[in-house]
Length: 261
Image (cartoon, rainbow, N blue to C red; front, side, top):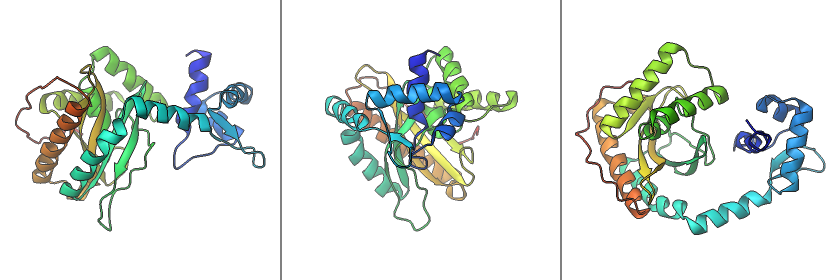
């Protein structure tokens, strides 16, 4: 990993649950010593990507992130296009829906529409989706080359957790199944009691760039419910792909259950 990669990787550590870091925390989470982390943080502060609270001395994302995000959305309005589709899907399914987009080796939530249920799954925008432990990660991996799958799974393990050989085999089986069915399902992997059903969407180059997913209580995911949600997320992903200019229209086989994860 280059020096630039190491510095920029610090930005991926920030989230709604952890919007600020002290130097020691940032060093521990990044896996680098304090001197190296401080040097990288100073470079990011100089570019406006990080800032440091003058009183607490804690680091947080800088205003340059917002400027770049607005430029990106103006050029490629993923959020604007996905929002009504996610909202409609959430209302129809009465569950939380979230849209995730790939950024390099990471997959992160760019928007979420929560269910109106009293007991509902909450997905925060900006949440990192481990490739191996979420329906969103599996759904996108299913459309990538085997070499790229291996690279992203290795990255995911380093960031989140180490997979045993048997667990990795189950992930590969789930990816193969998702490629056949056109959607992925994952239960109790990222968080106990939470399940997800997801399908990938494509850009105008017909490249898979993200996923749309329904998140719900595992107790509610019967085989009948899975089939209903699978049909719904596939239709939503196809609609978003079309609005993004994708011309790839792969016929989807009949939805059948038989969960690999």
